[in-house]
Length: 202
Ligand code: ITT
Image 1 (cartoon, protein in one colour):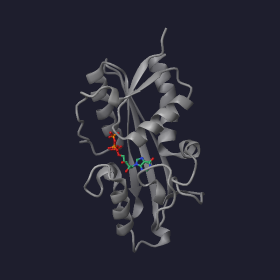
Image 2 (cartoon, helix red, strand yellow; image 1 turned 135 degrees about the vertical axis):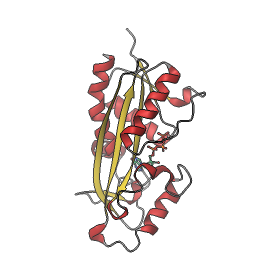
Image 3 (cartoon, protein in one colour; image 1 turned 30 degrees about the vertical axis):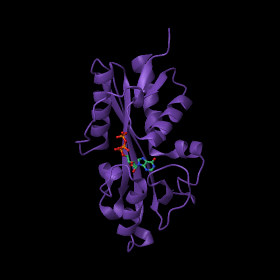
């Protein structure tokens, strides 16, 4: 029997790379296809207030539109000094969706006067799978760290250049991809999702 096909329901190329990489490394026997293979997919407004709610919205909509199982991630950065923001608004914090550089610069400006002891933050990821028959599951993962004052590193994406995980010295943009996957919010969420996927599609 051929491996079941799963659509990765994201329009963010960096997230797509990470989802692909982490799910393949998990050893799941599945065929992964990007959402770009389905150009007529509807635009899905992220109307929920939680990462889990939005991940389910995206996975559900893509499963319904393609007739295939779909995996989606909703993720973002929660900064203590900003009362948990940008949170679910992380992708559009500067007003323009997906402008990583502008988002990061706005965040650094907002945190200019925040002293070292109050620069804590965490990345959160909710990873959801939805099947065309309406079955759905969602799991979450996080990584805690601090926001530094100047971007460092050229790997990763988004806020990675200003985020140093707790106990580390390098930003998520300064460490190799596999090292990020091993500790990241997305790596942890997908580690929890992989057995769920195997159970549902096995
Ligand atoms: P899709 O909804 O199509 O998946 P998106 O980029 O809009 O793409 P999200 O709504 O989940 O996805 O927003 C995620 C944002 O959170 C992303 O644009 C970054 O700003 C930030 N983010 C999430 N994970 C990150 C990571 O691993 N490293 C750095 N920034 C991250």
